[in-house]
Amino acid sequence: MSPAISWLQCIRCGARYDSHEVRYRCDCGDLLEVAHDLARLRELHPDLKRLFNDRVGTNELPYASGVWRYHEMILPELPAGEIVTKPEGNTNLYRSPKLSREFATARLILKHEGENPTLSFKDRGMTAGVSWAKHLGRKIVACASTGDTSAAMAAYAAQVEDMQGVVFLPRDKVSPEQLAQAITYGAKTLAIETDFDGCMKLVQQVCDQRPVYLLNSMNPFRIEGQKAIGLEAVQQLGWRAPDWFVIPVGNAGNISALGKGLWEARELGLIDRLPRIAGVQALAADPFYRSYQTGFREKITVTAQPTAASAIRIGAPVSHDKAAAVVQRFHGVVEAVSEEELMEAKALADRCGVAVCPNSGVALAGLRKLRARGVIADGESVVVILTAHGAKFSQVGVDYHTGRLPGLSPKQPNPPLVVSADLPAVLRALGL
Ligand code: F0G
View: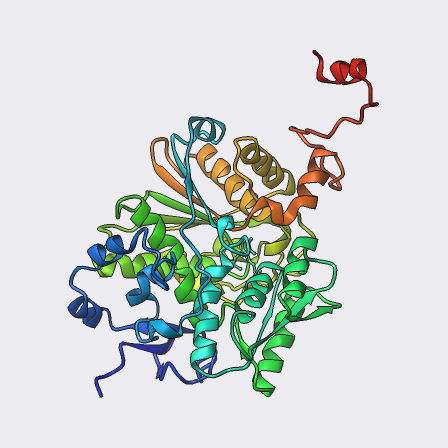
């Protein structure tokens, strides 16, 4: 048998494990990643660019997926016939003169991951994670979640015969749309009297003690799927990296995935230079920002406070070490923004016709700050990753526009006007 193309590898000590072993950490305690023999991949597929370009627009599964278009770079040894896909990905890039003006960034592009099947980027990770769970013959999959991971896991598990999703949610801390997805797709849903970090601890204990497969982003197979966000973005740009990617950070899996994918794309000759990466957090839950401020000498955790960006209300990011390495490798920066900054940035983008969630508002507010400080220079090209759809957090939008977000007076309110059912009153209300 030829040696494996992919294996599990510790990000710290480099220890290797077979990819079919069920483990989420190295014996030394650190995180694992799926490592690929890139030299071998180059040998096997001398023209990956052409292979990936030829698949654009195909209806053939799994290659119609914006994840499995890159099968050879995601999980090359997973047979195509075993893949669980909806399909996902193929999300749009948005650019317009209005967006550029409002965000003072001439070359601004928004990549809308809210256009995935369950309305967030998590589908990209879950197609990989659930496919691998099925490949390993696992029947019960579980995750802790602030609402989006659970929606995606529930939806993908529901596609597999005999697979049960189990979801650990912090009680009353996820949006009704998120909760509805977990329940309606049939996941066993626990609303636990704790926060996300508390749920994360519990789900890890359950997966250590019972035959339950963990599908949080500390499962490295999920990261492989999420890599496709960056791959798809650079392919859409003609295999050119922008100067910057800007991305919101919660548990820090997604920024890790973005970095891993772009690094491998450069190693494989798909792009000829690396972009810089800016991670952004809400000040209410800013452990990664605080760690960055120490030059990553300290790994800071906090008790995450309430924030409109509820999906990134996380105090102890599990993928901290991977994400810190990405920020350092990509000459990156980390920024943090207030509730007012994130909600105003969301409202601004919404008014440009792009439905933005509050978590993505964090990234957009970070962009504004980094532009104002000149960290992102005039004329540099910027891709902001919008991680979920605004419609998944509709109450936050309504509360903002009706002035009901605690401690915040909206600068761009657009509340509905209550009008009696007669024409003069309607015309008066419209100022016509
Ligand atoms: N944006 C959205 C909409 C999210 O749901 C999340 C994470 C993030 C950004 C941050 O990504 O954690 O990889 O840094 N949501 C997870 C969940 C925690 O459970 O849905 P990250």
